[in-house]
Length: 342
Image (cartoon, rainbow, N blue to C red; front, side, top):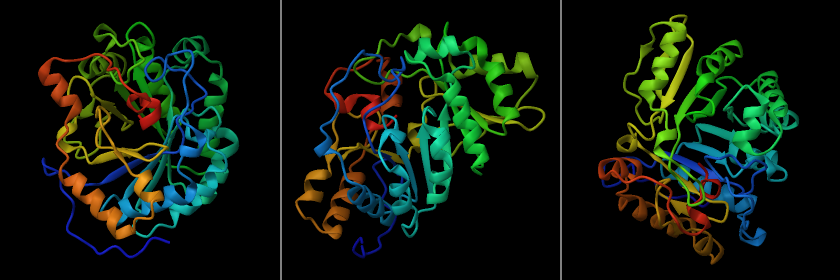
């Protein structure tokens, strides 16, 4: 049980952005090795004793919600690798004031877990789907399992998840020729597809600017196949710019490289071992596990979190775009996408 934390005005950072959304990693481990996330052959995983327990994850989530973050998204690594994940979902779904509880997954283990997660209180699921071709799936992920991902999507729909989102990282020469086919697949399944520009995040990947397919080019592919589209207006705090086909089919484009959404970003992320990062590109984070396990009260932790958020100045992708500085960084494991929850 989280102590009563005295209510306060919305916490705003130095750019006037609220503390609105928390991405909560439950593991750094993954059963794929996708090129845009963790392409190395092997990794040194976080020590198991360093991972936050379900009770610690619940306590931190409740603290963030008490400070205004009414959205929590479970991430990894691959979150479905965390044993007994429906139990954590059940703990989180009971947090007062939590408006939206979601999960991002590669879908490989989703089929048997979709119904238990739904029953536990999970509201939304986003599944990564970069291709409809098994051979391309193996090239991107360096693993087999394409059929299991498709089965997971079917299971999520059968379990009653509505507003299902599918995320596709578009890479030139890899899957950019599938843009219309993927959109057709999403339309047939009543899902919203979001195309994501290939990002230069993490120290281990071999990102190259020529592999990025910018949002404008993605739109050209779609308009050639489906005709004029509508939308493209203000996206608010959401990372995805909303669009619609002529028949009303929704889709989105996350222009993380060509038109970063940093100015409206209200999200931050906590790693599975309790490090809090203000930005996906942040070099430094704040260790919340140490004070959590040292016995700090909820009030003390809330004051610490609030003070750090007010100091937040990062606009990582936007700053890199303005400086013309791209390419993966080098550093410890906490810089990697699979550790801090991409």
